[in-house]
Amino acid sequence: MWSMRLGGIAAFLLVWYLAGALEWMNPVFISHPASVAESLVALVVDGGIWGDGWATLSAALTGLVIGATTGVASGLLLGEFALFRRAVQPIVTLANALPRPALAPIFLVWFGLGAGAKVAVSVSVVYFLLLINTLAGVDGMDADRATLARTLGMSRLQRFRLLQLPSAGPAILAGLRLGSVYAVLGVVVAEMVASTEGLGLRLVQATNQFDIAGSFAILFLLALLAFVLDWAVGHLQKRLSWGTSSATS
Image (tube, rainbow, N blue to C red; front, side):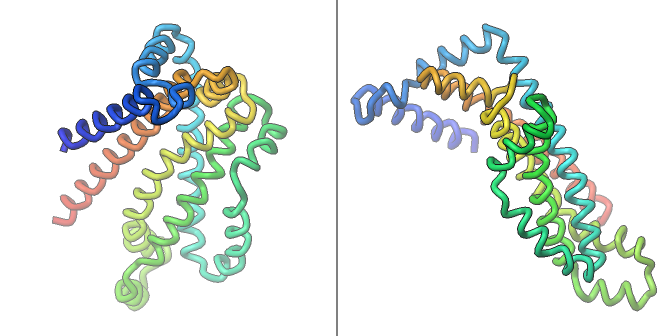
């Protein structure tokens, strides 16, 4: 598996190198793998990138935690109260349809240039993602088990703990894994609109200076950050799945 991944990366870098060396594309616009590596090393050695990286990561983690917690809670609530769900469904659909980049300037007016606006954009993305996934998981609950629960006279809390939550668990974890990536994207969008620190601000500065190699280096750091978050959530998903399987057996 790893040999295939490394082979794919090597092939991509080779095509990138040839595209510039053989002038398939203008090297000014696509830079060069070696130049990107040099820019990446320069960013790391400079040291300032660590503060910007932490600003982006901390805002993304905060947005992920708040958005996931409220999204899951809202999904479970709407899944339990069908009448309330039908009443608010159009509002949820309309709110979810709002483009997040368009919300970033509004959040900046409300919360200023600090971390608040970045967290708000991140939460607005993660919340609806987890809400929809949680509802899908609740809706996927086996109808026979639900009927049996009503026949046995289970309380609402028992149905929630023994049926709804386990049924929605896989969908919630899948949404959480996707949300970990989108949390970073939401923060970067806010940083690119207006911010005092962060990798998104660094990216805007690099592109404004037409520093293509530096832009690709920052994009690599953003991709690495999102990958680490996705890996962490995926690891949590495997542990929880293993624990569930062991408990079942």
